[in-house]
Length: 95
Image 1 (cartoon, rainbow, N blue to C red):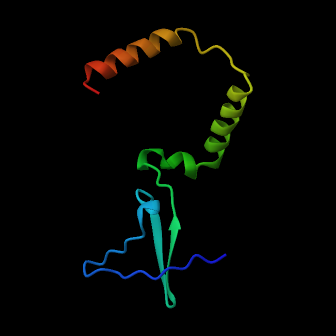
Image 2 (image 1 turned 45 degrees about the vertical axis):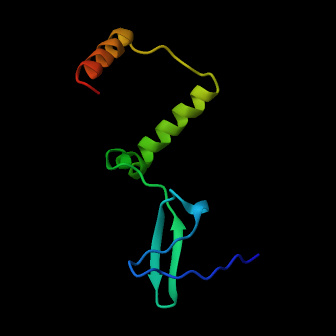
Image 3 (image 1 turned 180 degrees about the vertical axis):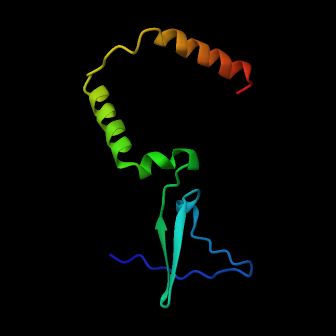
């Protein structure tokens, strides 16, 4: 099923795709025949390392699967105090 539409690019180089596309990120790929727009999901630079490290990503996915299955363990000794202290430090820093 084709849903082709003809749109005009305005004098400032903008192409309005309509409200259905509002707020979506796209990658524009230009070719000799024209261009294509593909949806993308952007990852903050500080989190990109996880997606680039297959071993770490696999470990996170495994942990999420185990947690979803109820396979939980206690944290390390003193973990509750570490969390409380970190939260206190974060809030006192004005975050």
